Amino acid sequence: MNAIRFETKSYNGIIRIPPEYAEFSDREVEVIVLIKEDSKKRKELFLESVEKHRFALPPDYRFDREELHER
Image (tube, rainbow, N blue to C red; front, side, top):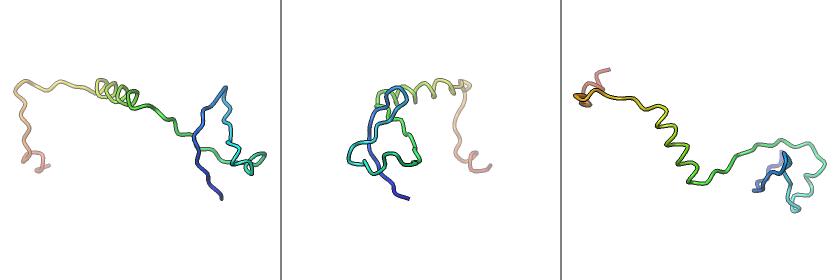
């Protein structure tokens, strides 16, 4: 199996193979799509996830490392 890597944009569900990979045209290929997100968007998604999974601790809560290791 040959593998190539390139970056492109999709338009209306179509991914253009760059001309330098013309030998892959009209052949059966396996495609893996990795969505590139800018760092600002990744940060927003991370903060949304944190907010979604947030929970409140009692005001008198104190972390005890020794208690953690006893489990």
